[in-house]
Image (cartoon, rainbow, N blue to C red; front, side, top):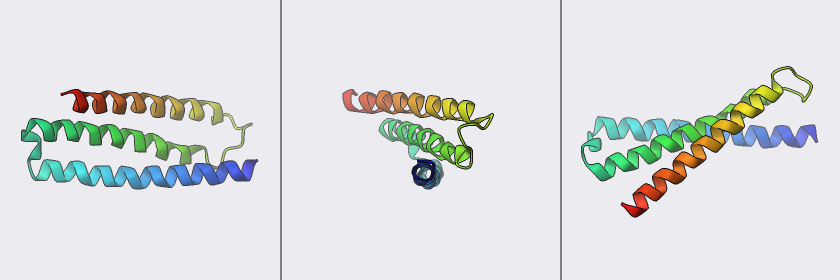
Length: 102
């Protein structure tokens, strides 16, 4: 139903925003402590950046929170959010396999 969909969107969006903030803090700590000089820390930072984009796309679900299915921008917003979530998931898989097999 419409109410259940809003609960799922709210949970996904707030989790995405919280994860985004945590990733921003982690990346800023890596830059402040100059840990990116070492190769393995650089790979881990790439993984955190991929998580940052994934959580940002999760936060995009709040954009369609108040829309109903008849709204003009609802299909565009859903397709955009789905594309970013799928793309960032593939990037995370790529960096995870890169870290694993390196």
